[in-house]
Image (cartoon, one colour):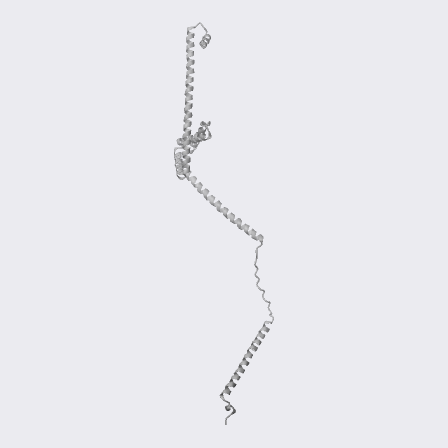
Length: 254
């Protein structure tokens, strides 16, 4: 004898199984949101619970901004420091240049001055010679007076300080080779010195001629006086009876 289940065919069983599966899935699907809601409610309740500790203060970030006055003061301070540094740099550069110039001058002087020659009083003699040149050309223009004093000083330096003057000439020759303008100036000075020398020679010649002429005139006058005295003596010897004053007056009239 067959049971009621045996009378059901396979299709009916499959349909029943599908319906049961769908019902179970719907129940599970509905249970998930309910569980999530309960969990969220529990978390909310927990978060709303007051704490026994004070809440930490939030970190405060303070951004300081300078005022306009501070900005201007900082700019002026920076400008003053820059100017001071620049001034120090210029002063250091100038000091180094002066030091180099001083060393060059000291070395040049040591090369010029001869060790076996006394600068004093020979340099004084050279200065006196230069002054004499100025006195000689005192009636000329200032250029000729300068050239005359220079020529006299040069001649005196060659006499009193020959080695030092030679060393000075060597240094001047080096400078002329280094700077051609100095060579041109030296040539012009030499020309002027030559002109002054010619003027001095002409003046000395004129003075010598005037001196010789004065000597001749003095000699002539002395000769006339001598001849007058001799004639007077002769006349007095011839006319001894007359007075000498009368003879002198007679001769002067003649």
